[in-house]
Structure formats: structure tokens, C-alpha cells
Amino acid sequence: MPLNLLLLADTHVPKRAKELPAQVWAAVESADVVFHAGDWVTANLLDQLEHRSRRLIGVYGNNDGPDLRARLPETATVTLEDVRFAVVHETGQAKGREARAEALYPGADVLVFGHSHIPWDTTAPGGLRLLNPGSPTDRRRQPACTYMTAVVDSGAVRDVRLVTVQRD
Image (tube, rainbow, N blue to C red; front, top):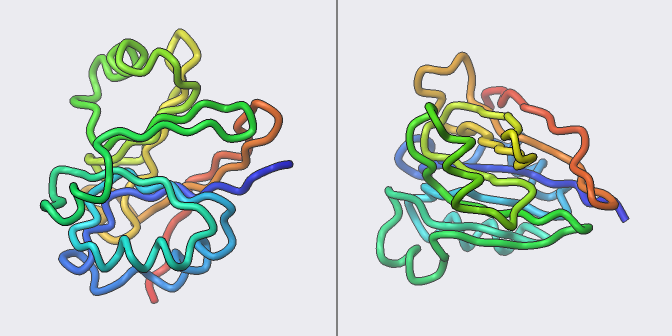
């Protein structure tokens, strides 16, 4: 059965935004699985996402304190519809990222990551797909705030889309 995925990272609530935009909450509520690749900043957002998500898979980031680190792993792995996912906040510099990721996550088909606030969608030579959804609240040097959606079904990830967040 196909699963609709939502990929988030670097939400930085309430430092970069008081709350997630309504568009993001709508995406959370329509997703079968929500991934969050770290930098939540407060446990309140984790509580809200746990409550409003059908299924949440998250990790802590470099801006997350002891309260979040006590509740979340540094790296998470999950298999959905025969696709093996790994989630981590930081992967290091862009140069050499694919090779590093393949070495660090040899059992994964997809690596979801964050930290840079820069959307990323590449496939490493060995087949590992790397996805960074950007940030829905802090665009930094990007033209817009973003998140990603995707569908996973029967061993394949399809319809990966980078979505621009419209201001509330």
C-alpha cells in the first residue's frame, strides 16, 4: 500500500518562527509518515508533531538540547514498503557527501538529512538517494522556505517533490 511521506528538517521553532506555517501542519496531517531530520529547538514542537502525525520518525540536531536528545536518537532507521531509510541531521560538507553517506549508511536506500537548510536530492553511485528538505521556517540563502513530499510503494520512492512554503 503506498505511503505518503513528509520530510522536514531545521524547523527551529520558536527561534526562527513562532510556529510551523499552516501549510506545513496541513501536510503533517495528510502524511502517513513524517520524517524530521533535527533542529527542532524545543520539545514542544516534538510533542505537537507526535500528537498530529500518524507516524513520526525523528532525530536530534546540533541546536537541540538535552530534553530533545533524551527523547530522540542521533540516527534513526526504518523500513517502509521495503525501502530502507536512515535519518540524520548532519552529513558534513557538500563535497564528497554521497561517498561519505554510502560508507556510513551501507544498509540504507534513502538518507534523509538536514542542517544546511539547502534542499538536496541526489543519488550516489551505489544507489543511495540523499534527500534534504531544506527548512520550512528559515530559508537562509535560499529563495524560499521548503519541505519535501514523496510516495513510497513496493520497494520504490516516487514523486519526490520540493514544496515551497507560502507565508501565512
